[in-house]
Every structure is written in C-alpha cells, then in structure tokens.
Amino acid sequence: MDKKTKGLLEEFNNGSCIRAFDLLGCHRATRQGKAGYVFRVWAPNARMVSVAGAFNGWDTAALPMEPLSGGVWEAFTHEGFEGAPYKYYITRPDGSGVYKADPYGTCTGEKTSSAIFTEEKFPWSDGKWMREFPLREPLRAPMNIYEVHLGSWRRKADGSFYTYEELAELLPPYVKEMGYTHAELMPLGEYPFDPSWGYQVTGYYAPTARYGSPTGLKKLVDAFHKLGLGVLLDWVPAHFPKDEPGLYEFDGTCCYELSDPMMNEHPDWGTRIFDFGKPQVKSFLVSNAVYWLERFHIDGLRVDAVSSMLYLDYNRPVFRPNRYGGRENLEAMELLRAVNRAANSIRPGALMVAEESTAFPRITKPDYDGGLGFLYKWSMGWMNDTLQYMETDPIYRKYQHNKLNFTMTYAFSENFILPLSHDEVVHCKGSLINKMPGEYDWKFAGLRTLLGFQMAHPGKKLTFMGTELAQFDEWNYNTQLGWDLLEFERHRQLHEFVRDLNHFYLSHPQFWQNELDWTGFQWIDPDNAEENLLSFRRIDCRNREVLVICNFCPVARPACRLGVPRRGQYRPALCSDDPKYGGTGMTVRPAVSQSVPFRSYKLSACFDVPPMSVTFYLRENLPKKE
Image 1 (cartoon, helix red, strand yellow):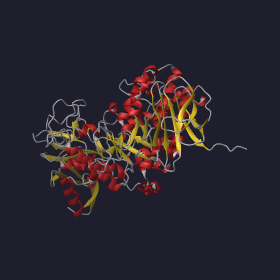
Image 2: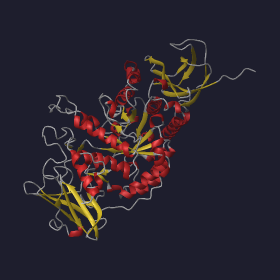
Image 3: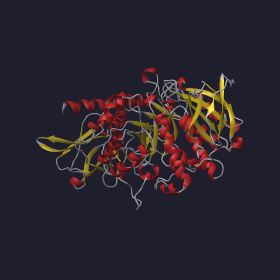
Image 4: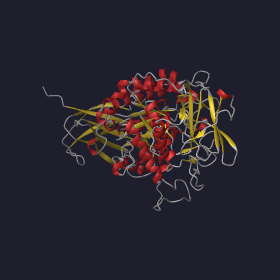
C-alpha cells in the first residue's frame, strides 16, 4: 500500500477525509507491471466481499476482495474495461448474499449496477469563471435562481429526455435571456424511482444516467459558466431509500444508517437516516459534497431537509435525546459544519444553502461563532406567510396584513433566500397562478404582484421553472412544461414581465447591495391594511433608492399620498399593471415631492397606484424653471 492510500485510509476511518472518492470505488491502477482497475469498498461486518461484473461473467467467486483496515476491502483486476457494469457481492454476517451497487461508483451501469468510468481530464473552458469565483462577494451581489428539474423542463417530441449535452445548448441560453443569475438543479445523484424527483438517492457519486454520462453533465455546467451563470445542486444527506442495491443495510447490518430502530427511519418518508456520528459515514458525506463541487465545478449545494437532520424528534412522537437530554442532533450539526468547512476549503465562497424550516438559530453564522456555516438559508417563513396572504380573498386581506410586514422583524437574522420552489406547486397545492383569487385576468395580476413583491423584498430570490409561463396545472415530473401556453396572450405577457422584472433587478443594485441590515431598507408605510397597501424603499451603497409601492387589492388608489425622503420627481420605472404585461393600463404619472409631512417623513408626494400591482419608482431632480 502506497503512502497516499495509507493516509487516505486513516483519514477515512477517523472521519476527517474530504476526498474518500480517491480511495474507495473503482480506479485505474498498475500492479506488478499490469494495468488494470482497483476496487475498494467499506463493508465492516461482511464475512466476504467479491466483485462481480461483465468482465468476469458475473462470477461471484472470480474476484474476491482482501480486507484492509477499518472494514475496507480491496481487489485488483486487469480484466476490467471502461463501461463494464459491476456490483459487489457481499456475504452478510448470517451467511446470506446480496448484490450491491458501488457506494462510490461514479457511473451507473445497466439496471441497478455501477459501471467502470475513469474519465480522462475534462477540457473545461470555464477558467475565467473559476478564477473569479473566490473574488466575488455573493452577499452583496445579485442572486436570482431558476430552479430546474432537468427531466421535465423540456422533452423531445417523442417524450424522451434531452441529454446533458443537448440541454447545454438549450437551458443556459434561456436562463441567461430571462435574466436569472443562477440555475439550481434538482438532485442528480442516481435514483431509481422517478416520482421521488431525485430525493431518494442510491448513487451519491453517480450522476443519473437518465440524461447521459458524467462527461455530459460537466458540459452542461461548463455551458452555464461560459455565460456567466452559477450552478447550484440539490443535495440529500439526510436520508436514503431502502432499495436493496443501495446503501440500505449495506453489509447485512446497519452500516450507513443508525442502528437504533427507534431512530433510524423517517416515520413519514420510510427512508433510513444516516449515522452522522460514524466516522466513515461522515467521510462519505463530506467527500460527496466535495466531489460535486470539485469534479463537476458546481458552485454550491442546496442541502435538503436540514430540519429533519437537526432535530431528533422531527415528526417523531418518541425519540432518544442527545447526551445532554436535548432534542438537537449534535452529530448532524457537526456533520453540517464539516461539510461547509470542506466546501469552502476547496471552493472559497461556495454557495452553501440550507433548506431549514424552523427557527433553529445561527444557520448562516460561521462555525467559530457557534453557527452551522451555511452562506444562505431558505426563508420558509416569508414563503408561507406571503402565499397564505396571496391566497386570501382581497376583501379579507386586511385581517392578514401582518403576514406581509412581519417578515421584516427577522429579515436580517440570517442570510435569506426567498423561495417559490417546486414544493409549493405539488401534492394538490395548486400552481402559483391558481393560488391567486379572482377571475382570469386578476389571477395574472396577482401573480405579477407576488413576483414583484418577492423581487423587492430583502433576500436573494428563487423561483421554480414554469412560474414564468403561469401554468394553471400543477407541476408534473413526467412531462415537459407547458411551453405551448406562450401561444396565448396573457401567458406571453406574463413571460415578458418576468424577463423584464429579472433584468430590472439585475441592473439596480438598490435591490441587492445592502441586504445584510437596515441600511438597505426603509419602510414608508407598512401598516395600511385597510387598503392592502405596502410601501418601502430599497437603497444601495451610494444612497440611491428604488421606491416600491405594492397594491394587493384589485382597486386603484389614485392620488395616494406617501412619504418621500428627498425633493424631486419620482418617475415610474417598472409597473406590473402596464398593458404590455396584461395590466389595466391605468396612467401612472411621475409624483412630485411636496412639503407635506407623512409619518416620519417631512416630504410626501401623491402617487397614482394601479389595482393589484407593484410599481418601482426612481427619483429624478426636478426640471429647472426657465
């Protein structure tokens, strides 16, 4: 055993390894002058392990493995070949046998097997992006994420999937043209069950073969980067399914999962929970995060179901407390800190995002300050409150007004992303446009108002694919988006509004330069519940502002007096009620400051506020009198 392998093995067994994929799995090697492949797998309680594959006729006795330390087994063969499917045949403690895919397999073979895949160095062309990435200040930069499920964004005429390479020609140019800054890809680790959307992973190191090879995925990421677009990937370290070829009771015992039957399954999902405190499992998960960031140039990971990891009693009537008698999962907390440390060590500034739905403190604070070390957290509170408000009939919205302004009481407690994700348009929740009350045109107006409010509110943005089409049907993973809707005027106008709104956000740093504290936000009138009005200012580092007026009622408010901070003329720069977007076309004139106090403002102006709309105003100096 060479020095490098020995060092990796020690790190793997003590839980400090961040590149376990260089040790385990299948790799090219030379032994006694013969070129071939070395296989290594962790199966600490197996009686025996062998490698069976197409290169040895699937003979379970042809390639026995030898034990190393810490439960790692190794075998070498010069008979393997690229693309050859293989599995490990594991003799369990009770003497029975089971075929298992390679937990560190980098490519999926036929059916549920792994495949030998040792790609030559990929010719990346995103050098400029990668060099500049650590120099960016993401918290003070625009971030508007387009969440994508690759298998249902577009499909071919016969219903088959586009490959990664084909998507590289279609998806990045569309994301760029629409004004998004990042794409977030739903999970791409191999998964057997299409209705899981990728959230029940069996191949953590193998990009799903549904869309082609690992090389193809690299081409897709490369295409995004060449257009100046970032790529995030959904990552699922909380749990895994009980499919026999996967991690489930891998060596005949609870190997990757907790062994405590009270705690090792999610009661709602029927999946197994990783043993986050086991050193080899920690090495597996931390290394997997590094693998996606390093090998595929992924810019960050959105970590799924963080709440379920942090709480021992998550959706569980009885639970086993931690060593201090509490409900916090201390091992999961340390695992997440280790993941974020490793991610930032190999990609400084990695965009690590927690999907966390509780008030667990300090998610986005550094680990040395008691935090978990994420860069962002999804604001589930903003999402839930805002959607509940928007689903309420405007007649009754005045009783729900606190759902709009309450979010600002915690807006700067974490670094938030405001998500309108796939989770909100599935499981009979209805599409976003169908959540809007009222008749046909008012539904479109409501959706435009919702998206305008999201864009103006402090926090980075995320919307799920199809939002820009105003699909009336819920998202269906089994078919492409309703692109034919763009043949209809209202849908085409909504699509144009989303594109213009995104580009307006990009070109106005007032929305994203000062999102860390109150210096970038000031209320004008947060309390006009009776008229369903909300108004505030967004301010950049040069003290330039965008004045935002949101009317959540389908009634116009002409000559609405609101405070303004400085003398001048306030010109409407973008209005969701513009007729080109399908609005009523009410005339929205510039508003001129007057020496009339309003609340804490010494000046005010009268604004023409269209029904069910969001309007952005920019200040101009008054024209000089001749």
